[in-house]
Image (cartoon, rainbow, N blue to C red; front, side, top):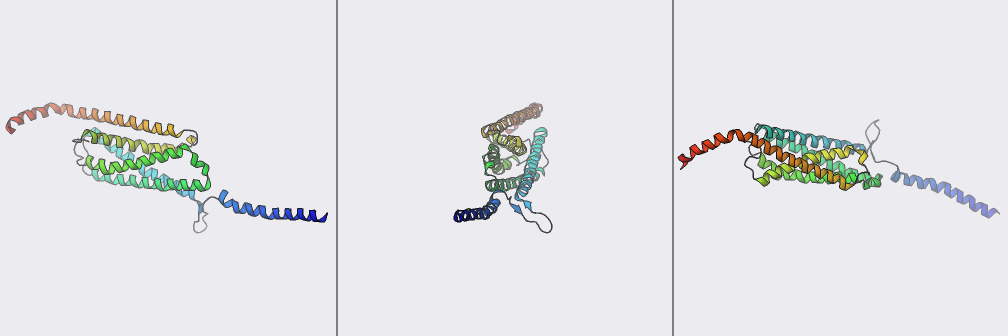
Amino acid sequence: MPIPSARRAAARTAAAILVPVALLMARPAIAEPLTLALPGPLPPVHVLTVLVGLHLLGVCFGLGGATMLDFWILRWLRWGDLPGEIARIFGFVSKVCTVGLALLWLSGLGFLALYAVEAPDKLANPKLWAKLTVVLVLTLNGLVISLAVLPNVLRDVGRPILHGLSAPRAALFLVSGAVSGVSWYTAFALGLTREFNGTVAYAMLIGLWLGGIVVTSLGAALLWRHLRRTAVSPQAAPQALGDEVAAPGRS
């Protein structure tokens, strides 16, 4: 029986050699995280750590800038005018928000690529795609604000906000402002709530976000009409009297 014994011994030897080799070859693709080497005695840093840092910076720049702009707009609604230099501040803070959006896209696409390599199951998370949808709309809305809203609104900050604008342009300003504010805070909330991972449907998350935009838009419109009516009503009679006195002279 020497031949079968030799075959079994050869098979065991081959298995003892090939199995560890196969495991070593498969390990980097399965278990080893992607890292970045640092100089000196510092340990390597996981790519995920870098992406999280960029993502947090993007949220800080964008959410902080958008909140500051919202507070200035509320002050404008309340007091009826702003100092002239505020127009430059609006432009500067808008650029900060743009930098924040760029960082969100850079880190967000990095997350998608990293998940595809290290944890493909995370790509099935509805919250991930809901957040991506929100940031996409936020980006498009930012282009609308920069190209069509701010140039018209900031023509003269010394007068009441939306003064002289047509109803469609005023509505565009109010809705775009609501989209910006609600979307930034929605993206922040989605990134914060790990409890939503894989537990809340995409449609529900988007529905809550859209509902927040509708409620905020209506609230902004009602507040603007109320404050405008409050500011105009004490001056309506003197203004009308002045128009009547000036009318004969013009004729």
